[in-house]
Length: 269
Ligand SMILES: O=P(O)(O)OC[C@H]1O[C@H](O[C@H]2O[C@H](CO)[C@@H](O)[C@H](O)[C@H]2O)[C@H](O)[C@@H](O)[C@@H]1O
Image 1 (tube, rainbow, N blue to C red):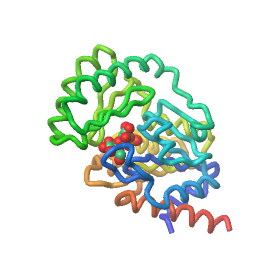
Image 2: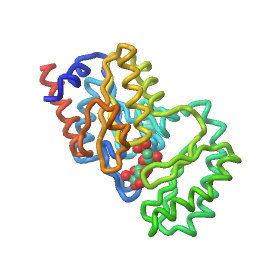
Image 3: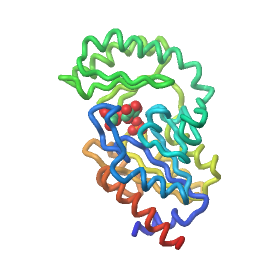
Image 4: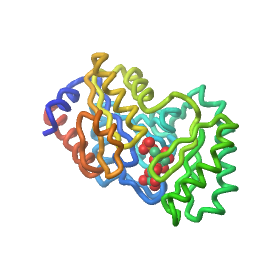
């Protein structure tokens, strides 16, 4: 059985279940392309989509997140909230927020610069391009800290000139549009889009904190809302502090998702 607090949310209709991918449903992998859903997760998401609106809310581009989850009938929200797709992007249009459009070219320019300047200097560097901006991964560099410094030093001035924002993720430097869209705003949009009465959000990292804090605000606004933090050695303390439930790692998160599907089908039986 899941906790009473989670059960209370699960009885609401319409209900939403929203998940981050990396570190939440997929263990952190050496490279972005190697990441996979934890065994069983796809089946539980599919089952959950029979009684809830299931959203995938990721820093990856929609196409990349959908490649990993690969289930029809889910909503894919990518690039930290800038892209939205009601279903798999192979069969549904991907909507890019209009305010993000001016940053398509500057983002591309910075990534081109990273390819030219950084790739030859940092063996193992992975440059992940997205529709808007992208992510430069230094996890495989021989000296990750030196790689991080070189990436930040190389991109600082051009990013300021092109009015792009630089942030940091897990062994990665993110090139982002300088917009205030984040996972919290995207979560609110998801709730309003489906007219939800209840929503659960699960995430593990810095960018997920926006989603977790939005859950607090949704509760204040009268929604049944619950935040789950997936704890890893490097989980930011604020994520744990503001979450309503903490699970240990992706394995426990997927077990909880399974239990949610079991409890809801028992109640509906
Ligand atoms: O905010 P998120 O939705 O968690 O997205 C952040 C980035 O996650 C991915 O990178 C991370 O996971 C990779 C695969 O496990 C790992 O190799 C990498 O070191 C991590 O930083 C994703 O590839 C990025 O696009 C996201 O921006």
